[in-house]
Length: 197
Length: 345
Image 1 (tube, each protein chain N blue to C red):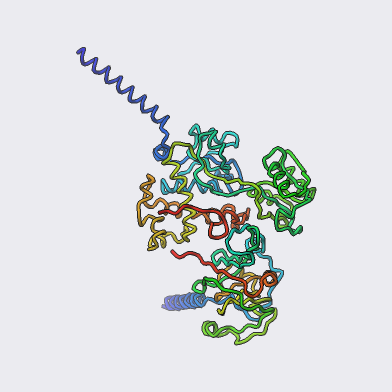
Image 2 (cartoon, rainbow over the protein chains, first blue to last red):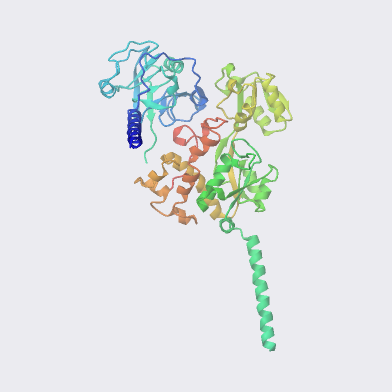
């Protein structure tokens, strides 16, 4: 009888453990935004996400930014059928968007004020964080139209190539600084999405 | 009695004649699809060993871009990609072997050219991979285009069209260069790796493979410029239109699938789609498959077993492979490249 009781106890405990862990994983930690974490700028990106000049045929003028959400690449169109390609991190499912916008503002080491809808989803986020190495927006930010979205740096270089953000596009700090110096306010930004079935 | 024996003889003669006719018909029947179905296998002529395109492992399992394309044809016909048999062919004999019907299809990094179609009575249905002559150089040289190569020492293989294209390109752009020539490709690579020249030229697909063998592959890059046209395509015999159509639309179905966002992972979802273009491709509307001599779900079979064009590319030669060739010209026409399939309607 005691054996049976012990077994039942173990069974219940196991069930509890399973439920609690599956609950924890359902509460997807937003590994995109980790205030205070200092970026490791020596992080080596996979070749796929490293900045490189590639063949790129387009009718868009040189200087235009084309973002391919599906590929996780940002192209800065160059003359002569070329583009500078950067690896990016994009919005998680349900946080992806598309369309045509312009860069409306540029900031170095931007402060971070998470928008209210983000605070609502992730109440643990700070209401304000001053710009600097530990800031999730990283070294530079370029504002996209009148949206709350930005092209920005990161303190999590390992998230390049993934879909984890709330709709922003992130580059490693070296790349975002390089891009920042190449594009003025007013630059056209085309954001493309995977076609729907 | 006489009449019975006579009848028997005539009957025998007729039987022999019919038998002989059947053998001749079998030998000279030019309809590849019928032969393939009867045999239960597609015979694919492939390269003996070219990393990323077609190469067998020590157990005889073939992998590669060209190999996968042939598997896609087998999947379309048999709903089974393993119904493709790979027959390695030398560069010198490949077109003759196809002509003599040793293989049903050549899927062997062959450049489509007018002379080849005319000389061998062959047909290249569609471009599977846009290749071209390019340049590899050390990353540290910080060049962005081939036009920055004025005054370079160029390592190149002697006696090739590569050498001629190189001369044409530099002359056309008023640029000077110095040839560092070798008969063997491995000597060209050795010279480059030991710093005897500033850049190495060869077909781009080859450059990515050669880079793997350098002492520090990560320190070298391939410029995005192509200075020649090397469209690689599968090859079939002329005057066998039914077969040519199957090969051509197998490739186009894979390219269109990528454009429509249909992958091997979401193919079941695609079968429920209400988008007309998707419905025509997966066969829930129209009967293109049957018109090809196959089944309604021919394209679904291809995508399910082999994937769309992008999946085939990335797995074998793209960023997910060892070669890491950027999509470049082989990206879709609406995403920066020139890969363009006619619509399926």
